[in-house]
Length: 84
Image (cartoon, rainbow, N blue to C red; front, side):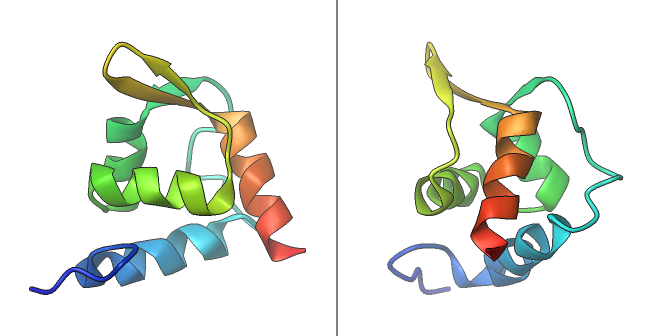
């Protein structure tokens, strides 16, 4: 499998899924802080690609040791801004 410059090709579906969820994210956490590993598992993508998604969408996150933590409200606000 070849890796593109931004994400692994097999995760293209996951990137499209995340982009389309901003309108109706009801099945996903709306509050709380979760590690990038948890977010990646929710969307069925690799953690590396989720981190790339954070960079692309400029969603705020903070590092806690070696973990990347993302607030659910920040995540969905960042997704909503992407659609504008």
